[in-house]
Length: 72
Image (cartoon, rainbow, N blue to C red):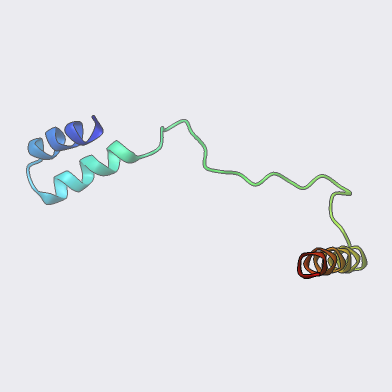
C-alpha cells in the first residue's frame, strides 16, 4: 500500500529533486517526536573491575564444566 502511495507521489513530482524532497517529508519522523534519549544509569547499577573479573571467571568455569560434560 505504501509503494502505491509512493508511486503516486513520484508521478506528481516535477523533477528528481522535487521527488527527493517529497520522499524526505514522507519518511521524516513526526514533528513532535523526540529522538532516542539515553537515560541516566541509576546509582549502584554498575560493577567494578574486581566484580567483572569474578563474573568472567565464573562464566569460564561454567563453560568448562558444560564443555567437559558433553565430551565425557
